[in-house]
Amino acid sequence: MSKKTGIIFFPAFDWAISPTHPEREERLLYTRDQMFEEGILDLPEIEEYSPRLASPHDISRVHFCVPGVEDQVLDSHRIAAGAALLLGDKIMSKEIKNGFALVRPPGHHAMRVVHGNRGFCNINNEAVLIEYIRKTYGVKKIAIVDTDVHHGDGTQDIFYHDPDVLFISFHQDGRTIYPGTGFTYELGGPGAYCSTINIPLPPGVTDSSLHYVVDNLILPILKDFQPDFIVNSAGQDNHFTDPLGQMKITAQGYARLTEKLKPNLAVLEGGYAIETALPYVNLAILLALAGKDYTSVIEPEYNLDQFKENPKITSEVHRIVGELQNIWSNRNKFDKYTFTKGAKIYQTTKPIYYDTHHIEEKQIESVHLCDQCPGFMSYDSQAYHPNGKHYRIYAITIPFQACKICQKEAWEEYERAKKEKHFNYIYLQDKFTDTFMIYHREKDREVRSQG
Image 1 (tube, rainbow, N blue to C red):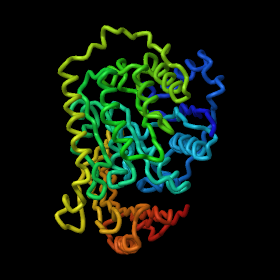
Image 2: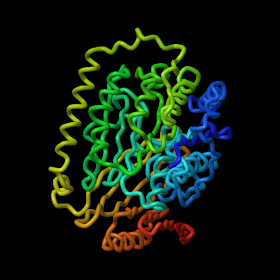
Image 3: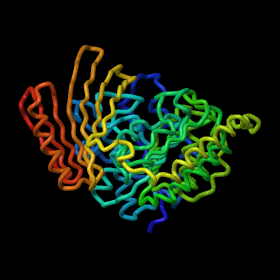
Image 4: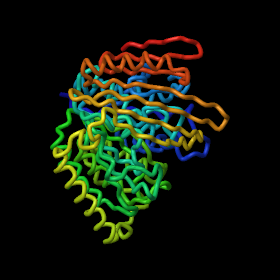
């Protein structure tokens, strides 16, 4: 197997929320300059690639874009996701040992249903990659470790009911930062209990407590789960200079984290200290992936005296780790019927706010339970736009693991929903056969996409 680390830069010059928004192209340009200055890309252990486009079908394996992919996804989004897919191909073919997709726009706040941009995200780059390698290469068990200061609520939403995808997120406590979620009791749906692990950390956590979490919780859970592929949602806004977070992690802390996790692929998420953090954190992560010495990567603003952690913070981190250790060790004592009390459908009502476009979504998620498999999911989603536009859609997801009975019932549910006049669009996402269907009610037209 190659010992090289693959890297792709994509700064997305033609995509911006606004010229002065924190999520802008300079996030990658300063990193690029730093790597050129250090000569990192000349190392024989590092290979740079150009990205490719993710196809609309690649995106439809994950998302229900309303009304369609072309309405929510620009070329920049397709290239950012395509960079992850290309590196995924290189890793699976053993051309490289691991990779780092330094791309924007980010993606981990994008949920399964997409009515617009939320948290700077339209589509979920990591989820698009995961569904692609599962379908293309038959990879079964995948772990995602989200290291962004903000909870990866979109990634959690997409895989909450999937027992074969472990989602671990450490982040600043949702009571103190967007999106206000990611608490320890959010543990996965009835057929996927403990496939979601959230570690909400108090503001002010330093490298020492972060690595206490890694060593005593994250790594033992990964060892138990035994994933075939590890994805790092590499958000870097836990850095001590980041303007949106209140954490105190350094470039060295991030590099040691990467060295311990040994992710197959890291995909850039947040991080908005454009000059004081990103060039150093990205450089340190890349060196750690390549197995090179990163100990000389030190930020100009680094001052050891500012990293003395408050004992109350340390105590709270230890308490959270203990709570989650206990939950994980007792995970096998519960099954789906513990939570559903014999019901055939497990239903959740979700209010979802799109902070960029000010869209309000009301969503009812239903898990159609099964004794033989995780079942299938359906979504009744209504979105209210500030301009008065209103959509109501119905969408069905058939997972990879679905049994024949659930596949049949899900297709029947799709045909039934097509007769309901109050839905503007009806979608079917059949991951077992890699089929995607959209029925446009006003046009009485059906579109089919096959992988």
